[in-house]
Amino acid sequence: MLTIQRLPSPLITTGLLLLLLPLCLTFTCSAAPAHAPTLLSVAGSVVVPLNATPFIDVQVVDGSSGAVLRFLPLDASRTFAFAGLPPAATEVRLFLRLPERRFRFSPEASTLAVAIPKNTVGGVAPWLQLTAAVEELQSTPAGEQQQGSLLALLVTVVGMVLAIAGRHKLVSLLHLPVVKLPKQRRMVVPMSR
Image (cartoon, rainbow, N blue to C red; front, side):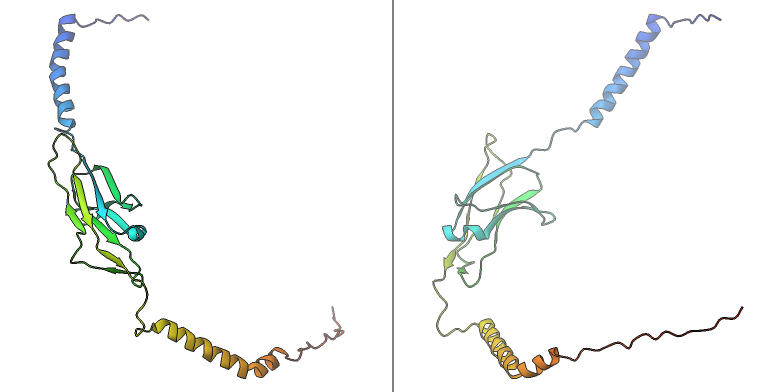
């Protein structure tokens, strides 16, 4: 069978399209964000002795939660740069992992954290300056003894004395007589059916 469909007139089709067009535009505009969030960029340098740079990390911190957003180990150039930071980033700080017996740190003469400026002129990243006042120690003072080394020496000497004194007992314990298992005996068991 053949059916004939009646197509709507062009006026009705155009009217429906004109009615749906503003509705679609409204939903599209409301789904798009009003403005894209501005991402931050920051760069700077750290004033620190060259031999302490492997023990320092530069961190970007979120101001509301205190979480570390990004970190970068400090290299020999002693500069850092971060791009594409979220607006929640509020400060750049230094994280020191200095060996205590090799370096002495002075917190009074150091600037370990700097706030990130939110207003930039011409899209140029602000230059931040951080300072870590670190002094390398030449040697341990003569009057100061290290307790860990003394304890290790004492344990080693006591262990050696015990090993020498108990050597005979230890050797005699290792030469135990061989334990022999008894032989299995065969037995004939009559079975009745």
